[in-house]
View 1 (tube, rainbow, N blue to C red):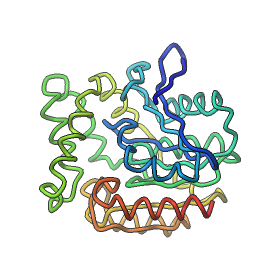
View 2 (view 1 turned 180 degrees about the vertical axis):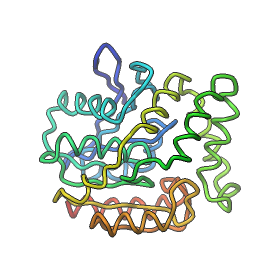
View 3 (view 1 turned 45 degrees about the horizontal axis):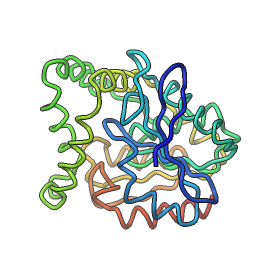
Length: 261
């Protein structure tokens, strides 16, 4: 059941299920809390699972024309404060990982563990920054097609037919995102800085989960990042959408990670 709070005059939607160690699941770009529908129930058997619809996504309002990683993080902090949660584990998918790092920067002593799921602490390359700028212009006239293509491009090509039904459901959810939410989040990702130091300098448990065939994140760069920041890494055989492409394995890995925090 979704609940809500008001943060800076914006409605923030969230869910809170289970008991035990608090685990905050943070969805990615063009996703919402429903992405965790097959993950949260499993994890909630032994933990307290909080999911939050990010600014401009799901049932949460937009808050301006740029949603920086820090602003996203502030909204989640407001939910955690409302729930009186002092210590927690973070699991962030893609954009959610960038936000997890912003949360950890402001609250290092509250973090028990941080998992970057198909995500990175590296900043965007110049090429990717330019792609985001172009996408923000194009969606103003061709939103539906760009969103549909973007979602398909996140999967390993061999999985497109295997997960056809799931991909269509993800596209349907993504198309509910307002254009302002798309642009504000994309711009926030474009301007975010490198946060390798958040991983390397903190003592909380850290994990990077990647897909070997991820079309968004370079496999070798992810391996180098894990080594450079002294972070454990798990490699799946899929693309950028491990919660679909490698669901059962992901649930097992997350259970072990949470247990070890």
